[in-house]
Amino acid sequence: MTESTLDARTTEAAVVLANDPGWWRQAAVYQIYPRSFADANGDGIGDLPGITSRIPYLVELGVDAVWLSPFYPSALADGGYDVDDYRDVDPKLGTLADFDEMIAALHAAGIRLIVDIVPNHSSNRHEWFREALASPRGSAARDRYIFHDGEGPDGTEPPSDWQSMFGGSAWQPVGDGQFYLHLFAPEQPDLNWANPEVRADFLRTLRFWADRGVDGFRVDVAHGLAKDLTYPLRSHAELEAMRIGAEGSHPLWDREELDEIYAEWRAVFGEYDPPRIAVAEAWVEPTRRHRYAAPTSLGQAFNFDLLRADFDAAEFRAIIDHNLESVVVTGSSNTWVFSNHDVVRHATRYGLPADHGDDGQIGRAWLLTGGVAPTVDVELGLRRARAASLLMLALPGSAYLYQGEELGLPEVADVPEADRQDPTFFRSRGTDVGRDGCRVPLPWTREGSSFGFGADGAHLPQPAWFGAFSVEVEREDPDSTLNLYRRALWLRRDLQDVEELAWRAHASGSDDVLWFARPGGWESITNFGSTPIELPSGEVLVTSAPLADGRLPGATTAWLRAAAAG
Ligand code: NOJ
Ligand code: CA
Image (cartoon, rainbow, N blue to C red; front, side):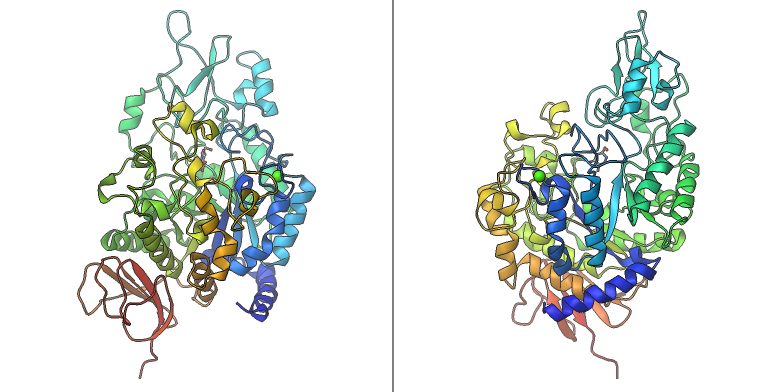
């Protein structure tokens, strides 16, 4: 990458930032988990000034936007998804002034900012929740959350047998005969979205950040806000039997009342120029994503289909086809994602033995059975991850990338028990290893204290092998995963904003090949199998692994510019 290309991009992007309301449709969005990205003050915790200091890296990488996971004041009972105050910065991460500086620097570099918003639950340290605990049953303060009297002869039983997502009862007693609902950790009491005060306060929060220049929002548990809690409550088994987001009304998930809530949010987004955007985290059936992706609603919804899929041509093809059809219905654009802060990194997932099964935890259950080596094929995992990512970056729609995947970083499967932080580990009593393994602070340098993450250690320990995946090492290696992502992200800017692709049939007739063309003569071809295949004609722009005598080897993707017709 020459300096002049970077300069040109910065100038061009500044213009786009001011004018393009559709900027998100094809954006490459880079997720930053702030506590694990870069630590500027050397206390072992990544922070906002750390992010600001690494903006040149993001520019070099070629991403269009950053999605910032929660940076709000928090006791970190759930990695920051337990928010004490929605309109402030965690003092461990910086100040509002640091935030303003960060966003100004991102914008000046041509990079947008999406912030995570956590509306389903606050933390138990939020001033509202403290007030609720100090107030009597039936009070307005308790009505901002979901309180119920206990059951049983003496009222000491929880209102239902519901289990929280992190294990254990979803109801917590408060000592006066009432219980509150927490679908996640007990430190995350669910807010009552039937209460107009809760709704109004979130509109205030959206404006607070939008006024500070935030370009959009990633909406946590977007399918969970509206609930039907009329008595009698159904049993846990009954709820489990109702598929989330399938047809019919589930008391907890994907309810129709959400449409009204997000219509209010949409009106706020529309107060800004360009309108603020939002992307829903909604674990619903693919056919039900339109509730969130519709232009009258949040506008975009994560599609986790590829993230859940095996490295398999037929599975990928079906998912791509289905999602291309869906955006025609919603008017949204596609969202593609392989990794995030909740799942085993895809470089490791793709190295799991074929029979690892669908454990419902996307690879985590397998990791419990003995760590990565020697049962995970690290080399194959990375090779496939590179092929899959290059394929994804050629698809129409926006690509959501998780910090470290551009380094091909594997999961840290053996985080010592004493260092674990994720509530899923504790609440499941270790039957789920949790998500710490994908949240280990990034390696920036080959050696040194915390591999350049900060001056003095890292809040989750980094293994010795991290240095080999560092930015410093990969920057110098032309064949590194980092340089693959950089090349692909830069080339990707030329892809046209058309939600279309045309499948091509490969001469070999192999079921292991996915080959498609994008408008403008771009083509991407992936060999999911193990036998090298003939490359179609055209200029080879980038490949995820070296060609073998001019042929496309197994677990490899190539981008081509088709030879001009005639
Ligand atoms: C989804 C987030 O991605 C995850 O990290 C969090 O634990 C839950 N929502 C609860 O907020
Ligand atoms: Ca710090």
